Image (tube, rainbow, N blue to C red; front, top):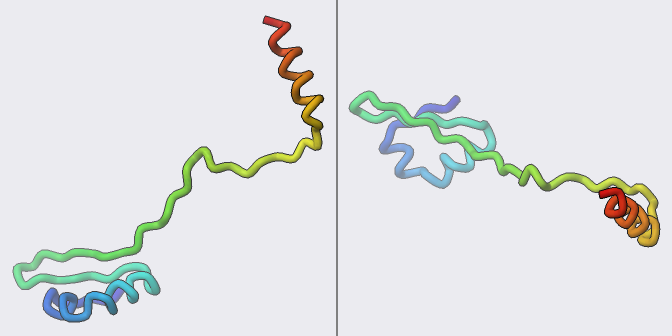
Length: 73
């Protein structure tokens, strides 16, 4: 993990972001002793974004299944 002072980070902020993207984490230390970490955020997909399954059914077969299910109740 690379460590920068606040002044270095401020002067080279775009480089710091590129480095965080490449290496994962960059640490910034302030003079008062506080430290901060910059790291990239992973994009998250929707939990509803799932891959479809090809059941090789025709539209008529799908309609028949739906009608059959409705007739049961």
